[in-house]
Image (cartoon, rainbow, N blue to C red):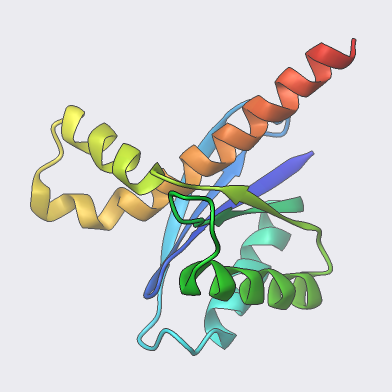
Length: 146
C-alpha cells in the first residue's frame, strides 16, 4: 500500500511518498502557494500526485503545541484534513509532527547543505520524517500483533 506524507505549512506543503512495500519514505516535492488561505491549487496538486503514485492513504503532520494542546496551526491542519478527504476520497491520518522541521533542518545541516539552500528542501524532508514515523509505527504494530 502506498502512503503519502504531508508537512503542511503556511506557505508550503512538503510531500513524500513511501515505496510500494511501505518500508521507506522518499521526498517528492514542495508545493508553494502565494496566499495561505487559498488551497484550491494545492489540493489539486496533492490529488494529482495521489493518482500518479497510486496513493491509498495520506498521513498529514499534526502540529500540536509542546504541551499537547491544539493551536491555530493545528486547527488549520484539521480543516485541510477534511478538505483532502472530500477532494481525494482517501483516508487522512493526523500524525504528531512536533519537532520534525527542527529534525529536518538538522539532517540538512549534517549533510552539508548550505543555509540558503535548506529552505528548498526542509519541507520535503519534514514530510518524509512524518511519513517514516508513521511507517515505523505500522511496522512495530504489526510485529507486536504477530
